[in-house]
Length: 484
View 1: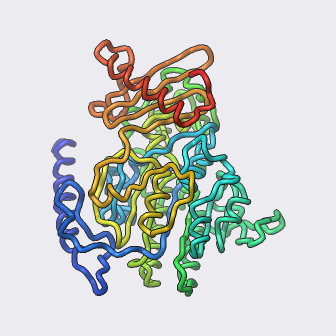
View 2: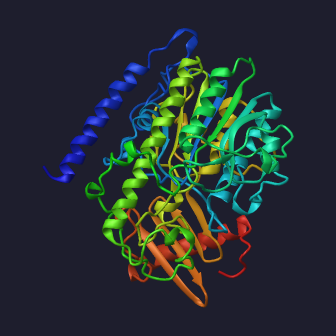
View 3: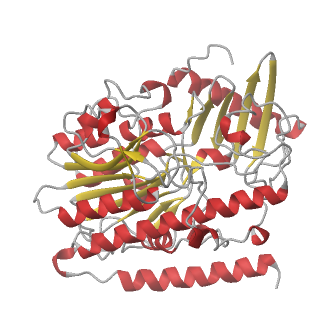
């Protein structure tokens, strides 16, 4: 059977599964609460006849580090095992085209997390979040108990004012997953080095344990917001041996856009991430890196499963909204790159799923930003937004009232790269030294971004249109680079 035929057959089975699954899930339990993500998949039928979903009381945020959008089995990656994320994808609402806006430094996660935590755009929030209210801070001020565990890469002061409790807190960007330096929650916000200790287990297990302990020990009547920021699958990619053995590099497919080297200087070809393997990229080495990447994600998935099981065990699965997202993507061999310091799909797009009694099962290919999550959750939980939030609530999409909240998304990386992406095309402009390079991709026919149409006569009209949109974005968002 051909690969295309297998995909068609697989897609058909998944479609039948989803339809049967949704019918079963539409049973209403006492009190009008829909079980998990009960509802109707968007585009297949109307929601008008559905019982109004209950409003959640709590929110649980599960945030992964360097996880690309296409690393979930249920969303099309047949080589990876992610049973618990698959459950969220089947029962919850998936945004398949969620993007980060970019970064002005190589540690892309820092501004990405700052935007996620404040709902603001790239140049309207400092990376340490000084002077800007955070999402957990606002929830805390509206009566929520706010809990944090895992990675916090945006300054200790912003953490101190945002949370009421926490455990196993890691201030930093990356570390040996088996020896993570962590702190217990310090209500004074001082976190002296003398209080630092080394975690006694793999990072994903350490942070999952902290969340599980919080859920089991939580007895209050106040709502809670739990923020769990994993450091996986960020390198060093050292999954526990059981998970490493799940993926034989020899059985891993190279992506269609694999290249031994990037075809031109994008301004950041020798940043730390790009030095994780040799030049030119060797196919066997890339397969090994992908296998380890998948092992990290499958192990992370298992820890998420433990947390979801505890949510059910403690009776909170029906009154808690779960958000799963990643802070940025990663190349891992695509376009001859290894890192996330670029504006290709593999680095800008992230997984984003919402799951809970207030969320119908469905999928949307609307263009959304990661920082849209804050106003979305605020609306679902009826928490007022502070001034300055620029993200758009995605509730109208979730409820089937509209198909989109914007027509395009903007991207920026340092002073070198700018992009604009519509539903059909992406335009990237590079300004490296005295040289300017342009790329234009037709994403409908070329989703892997392999054929540059920037110089094609037939593509000049769309290129000019996107160039204008790019300049409009730069003015609107306050791009600090005057000439680009």
